[in-house]
Image (tube, rainbow, N blue to C red; front, side, top):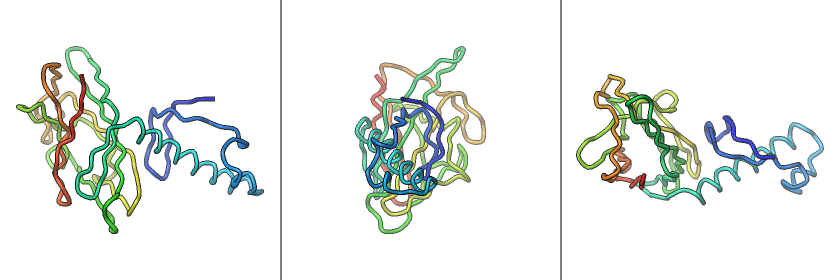
Length: 186
């Protein structure tokens, strides 16, 4: 009934978000009226994608920077040997522009997103930005994930180190807006 898997949707790749595979009868009466199987499937898929996004919005913390609203859940912290790894999943939505808004991150040295503990700024170790940008049409929402951990070069020369006594922020430095989002890791 419930599954947690990687899905490719029109909102981006959904990884690890628990989805509910509901029987046709419990999705939408509008979808049930569609006789052609592929069209009924697309109808049900749109409803399920909307549920995933709505659930993430309900569970996540909300921050607005410029025309983009960021939603995130508590970052996942792991240890690999003596290295700290933090993974942050975001849902971003163009809620304030009638034009496309692009989020840019082509590499650690040229990325408009960092994490800071107040004294050290960390660049990502991995992300799922395709071609270095994520374009949001008006009212469109997409998921993205960034991992901060071992330095990988190319502008990322400081290993992420978690210290429970520090406050961490996710920092946005885009042409359309700048700000810091508290991560509340503790």
